[in-house]
Image (cartoon, rainbow, N blue to C red; front, side, top):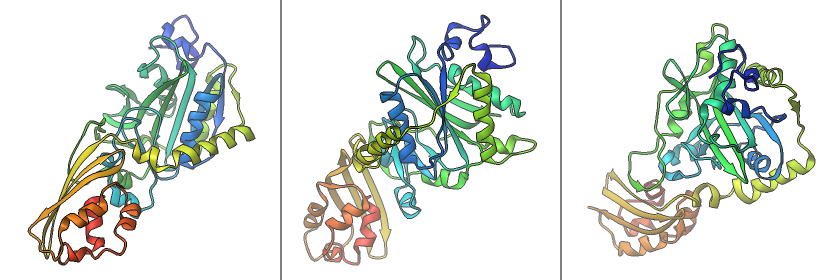
Length: 353
């Protein structure tokens, strides 16, 4: 690590390692992305990474949303009932790592550049400018573990990377003044017995940068200062304004990929889940087998009574997407009480998905 005052400046100095220099060997362009749509923002990352040449830094914020890692099982990472009731979108990103919660109190940064040997998983290189910037604000931060930035041991920024066509994308989600209540609720899945082979998030103590500042500033000012920091400390950096073609291509990615159930839920690996609940009329346990986000099999057990064979009810839910609207449609016109006396479809649905 460099010892000079400005880490961004020293990335091209002789006192830095070769890895530290690489981020600034070529001229970079700064994208100030003022969209707050999480769908658009993630799609724009892909557009810049896969369709545009050159080196870029992008700063952006998103409205409340849950962002799932590329290799994760969506059902395992979220409280589906909470995010549904609160209208919180769930979106899968390109990079690996764990699930994070975005809101307008977060500031996200993305660095996209040509891939060099040793760049992948070199989180110290890509997070050094953020640490330097915070030091200028009087906040002491450090890289901890594999990919987290922490203040006094509490995480405020998770980082992840993706590589496409010889280019690397590094992005980080900075908690500046985020509302930590929905963060905790949305990323707290129900206590179900769920088995899958996905990459599970590791829950850690989190904090906001603003709470560690002697004189906190609005998040909008924090965003502006960070953009100025990059402009001032990276020689030759210029602003890049998105073209109509960039916006059109990004919006197409939103429609065809990032807003689709297939990408955000259907990409989840196979998993099994068992849920059990006690009702006034008895105990009901649901055992599901889900592949590609679709219920391949479901079994209902319990000490309940029913007029009709429960296998008819189970069969109605097979080969149906494991989401509330799809199940509601599949059970439309079905009197669940015929199979489980005392139960309604409204009781059954939360037990399934």
